[in-house]
Image 1 (tube, protein in one colour):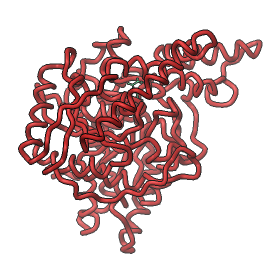
Image 2 (tube, rainbow, N blue to C red; image 1 turned 45 degrees about the vertical axis):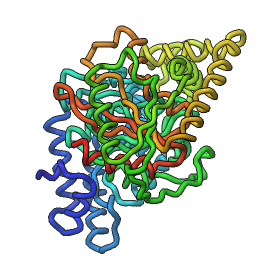
Image 3 (cartoon, rainbow, N blue to C red; image 1 turned 30 degrees about the vertical axis):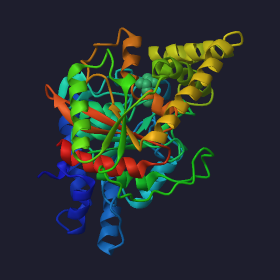
Length: 471
Ligand code: GLN
């Protein structure tokens, strides 16, 4: 097996047994990036010197005998998460030359573990999108089929791992952005419970929805990274006092809910077949399959596409040409704003800002934003009711496998439809994972496992048992 194909666990064993050094491992990834990323476009920046320096530090730690499972493991970070001293663009022209002045808390935590950060990965501009095509720096291609998208918004975080250009990565998920690209790229992606991981140092999109989480090759790897980054942070008031504990929860006796509203018109028949067969396998292993109802599902997309743009319009107001990044010259202040935002933001970001300011404006606030908040409560309630009857919920991650590049870019609504199975989880603040469930015509299909608040351990235990059966 090649070094770049190893999982975190395997690479750790190799480092521990002195089969190779972190510098060798890091160089192997850097070489692969040079070879393959011209085509895939998963990285927006790679800092070789920084990576090698971190690897040397890690090798010292390993030699001293005091090291952890992540020490010396090379990873990739979504370019919406701040790494001190490195550019952080959020794949926007408005932040083209912005250099992060501090580390996000997740980065501080990973650095404490001695990871090696290879570089910053591509995404839909400001994480707004489902295909990765809204990046100002070009779409990321899917390593399984380069005529197709990697999925978004954490497109580069998924493609770098799927393309063996990082051992694992961090993404962020506001409405599916970790789970969807993981599904499209055949990986494991965990969107933690709202508050389980600090958002300090994540460029905000929808503050009541955003969460950072891992993308990895195996459930065990995702667990390792999640454990390293979770927990209370005094710099993020919404972070929770959460301690991860290992669970030996088993498929046998597990009550699994299958929402009847999720298997209706619009889902690709092959995807449906793969998900249903995964559910069958869980049943064969002793799980009890329960049909459940999430009646507000039909309003989830409308609700999300009011709340997320509303929060985005408020969050993005700070990019005014004065405080951060791009600043266009003009004769008066208003023109500075107009020119900076006009030239700095891409079409999708402008669309969201306009939608958001409209739904928050007086006269429309009650009809749109307030109504959407009420619907959000109904969606939460649906899940609360469901979790009285079941332990976990199984669902598709996406109604379709990876789409062709350009297939849906002309029609934003058709793009938003890909989020049908993921947005409710964020609206309800729940944890969800996507794991590979099979392939159709060579394209990976993800199974989504949703749990109750802070039950990542249950999700991970079941996902880990299932992953072996779905191989
Ligand atoms: N595709 C969704 C959107 O465009 C979700 C994005 C995300 O999770 N960051 O808003």
